[in-house]
Image (cartoon, rainbow, N blue to C red; front, side):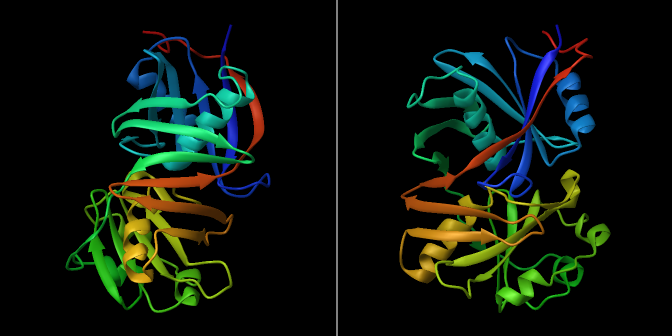
Length: 269
C-alpha cells in the first residue's frame, strides 16, 4: 500500500485561497531524507509529517528545501486532517510534540484554535540589504526568534511590495515579515511574509509569523485580541489572542485534494 497524502488550504474557508499544506499521517517514524524528498516533490511552502507518539502525535514540517522549527498553517492543516479522517473524535484535542515544544489544537465550531509560543520582536538595526531588497522605508525594524519584522507606513505599501528575492535570500533569518496597520473595518493589521532563504519566495498565510505579529501589534494597539489579514495573492485571515507568553491563533481549513504516494521506500524507519 502507498502512503496517503492530503492537501489542505489553511487559514481560509474557501478552496484555492489561504495557504496550501500537504499532510502525511504515518503509522511510524519515517527517514528524514524521504520526508525531505516528498516535500520537494509536493513543492508547497510546507509539508507536514505526523505519527502517533505517546498520548498525541509527533509533528515535523518541511519546506521544499529544509526542515523548519515552527509552522502554523501546516499544524492547522494537520489537526483538520486528524478530525476529518476520524483519527480523532470531534471535540478531542490534537496534541503535537514538535521542535517548538507541545502544540495543542482544539475545535470551536468552524474554527480551529491553536496554542503557540509567543515570539515577540526586539528592536534591531536593519541588516545590510534588507530594506534595499524590499524597496521600502521602514517605520520600525525588529527581530524575533525566527524572523525580521519591518513595519511600513501603509497597507498599500505592503500590498505593492515587489521584493528582490535574490538579494532578500542573503538576509540571515528564516524570513521577513512586512506589516502595517489595517485600513479596513475589522482588520487590525495586514502583513506579507517572505522566506527565499528557506526555499519559499512568498508564503501565502503564515501562522508562525503571527506569533511575532501578535505581541508587536498588541503593544501598539493596546489590546490582546486582534483580527488580521495576510494580503498575499491567495490571501487569508488569522484571528489571535495574546495570553502572556502564548498566542492563541484561530483559523479555518478546507481539504482540496486526497491522494497516495506510491514511492515509499525509505519512508518507514
